[in-house]
Length: 306
View 1 (cartoon, rainbow, N blue to C red):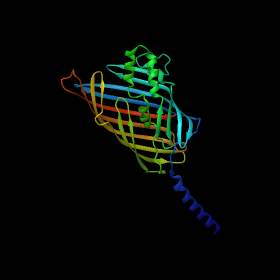
View 2: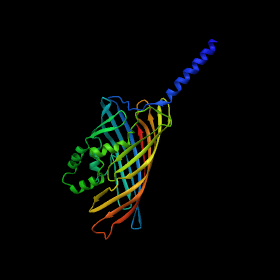
View 3: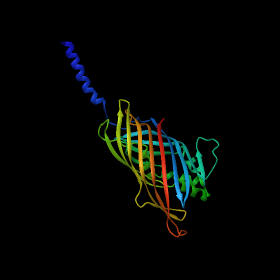
View 4: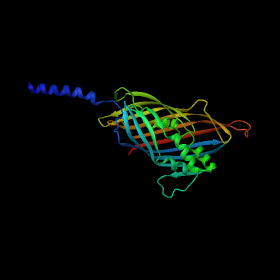
């Protein structure tokens, strides 16, 4: 009889434990004084058709981003963020340009001084336990540092600023870094749990992405999350460049898969694919009528913890 009772007790205990182990409440539980790093690798293929002629541009962006937690107050982390390495490469039949901070023989070009200023420069980022980025500072000041590096060479400075336009400012980085840190829901998660989020990125072509996330697997150490969604340029977005006005109308799909450290909430690995197409309309006093340029953009990004 005692043996039967013991078995029943074990069954009841097991039934009690199993539901608990199949749930997780994701939060960023990071240690003050510790550095958390992400190695980024992004490839982007842009194909545009200009008056019947196809042109392909291949961009490669990479680097190591180190985030050191300086303090935590009322659930908000203050951190120092540094681009420890940086890689940028643009290749096309018309124009090519590259930068690699790890290459001791890096040749100087119009963007090298700007990227030299970025690598090793320390920025401040504040974010809460759910992953909401509250504030990013230091990028506005960086613009002054970059200008000083070019001195009187205003032509190269203007070209460099055009290449990284919209990328390095406090507000643009606050938005762009939201692609790196997932925002977790307040509720506990279990396999099949869904939630949604919007990410507005800025830069040469601001995009609004709408994600639907789903927990695909979890255990005591790792939470696997998949996501699908849509992305599109801001309605009515246009910009001036070289005396021309460009009107963007692009949209497409996005999907991601990520492995999260269940104890810290920090991503172990994240892959994201984007597939966008549409038209860029160009207006210029030199053109008799607006010129439409069909365009497709395929991107793949990977973030790996280090």
